[in-house]
Amino acid sequence: MKGRGYSVFVAIRKTKVPHHAESSTPGYIVGKEQIPPKGPTAQVAVGPQMLPRLLPHRHRLLLLLRTLPRAAARYAAEVEPCQRLCSTSSASSPSLSIWRRKKEMGKEGLMAVAQLKRLAALPPAGGHPRLEQFMRSHVSRLLRTDLLAVQAELLRQDHVILSMKIYGVVRKEIWYRPDMYFYRDMLYMLARNKKVDETRQVWADLKSEDVLFDQHTYGDIVRAFCDAGLIDLAMEIYEDMRSSPEPPLSLPFRVILKGLVPYPELREKIKQDFLELFPDMIVYDPPDSLSDVDDDFKFKF
Image (cartoon, rainbow, N blue to C red; front, top):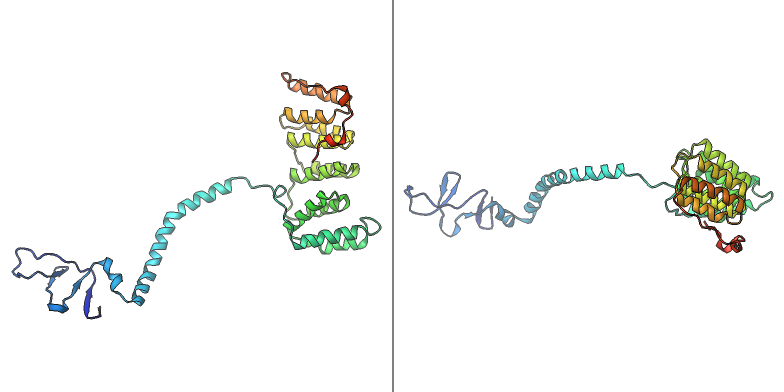
């Protein structure tokens, strides 16, 4: 390649002429052929590292483009094993339940909540034909994230009628899977609002789907119904807790015992069960003056 008054030879290296050579003039060797310099316009000997400096910009760009595929292949060969390890570890770790993730409501969800509350106020409460039509035409078309956010907002507002309607819609979705947290939140809301029939309906649904609570969740639910004054439901859930295959824990029993302070007879029964399961532990009985518990000290969810 020629340019700018000098010649460039690729893979040219400068060496000394062997002693046995007849020529006394030092020169440059390409392979096995000696090329002597010729005055001021002698060929310049360059190595591969000097070649990009002597090439025009266009040729340097072409050279760079030729080397990119090889560099990318070398990088992929180094990174691929790490990516495989990372993907394997992330796939093996359990994902967070959709009922425990943060519920971020979009514009569609906000509009649905406002319209649902407006239509639910029409007589008869919760049974207006326009409400049923809106449930079929709009609510059933919401995305999963929006539908879950709508349900969480209605539960937070203690809107029992609409929460039960969204509850039914969620259970019919194709992506629905029975989950402990889904039913736990429903039972908390129903306990706060002292709804017996709805609670029995939700409890029958979770039993039909073989949903199993852990011991801590059992204790919180029983405490919620005790604070709401629904002692019959609380004892039914407690009996289910005793028959659960989960190993018993002491903390849920203590939570229930604190909720049963206004009911000394039931508290004594739970206390005996607790001491049978944990004979090395002690239960402190409150003074008689604390039997009448103020609402401010009740367990909040």
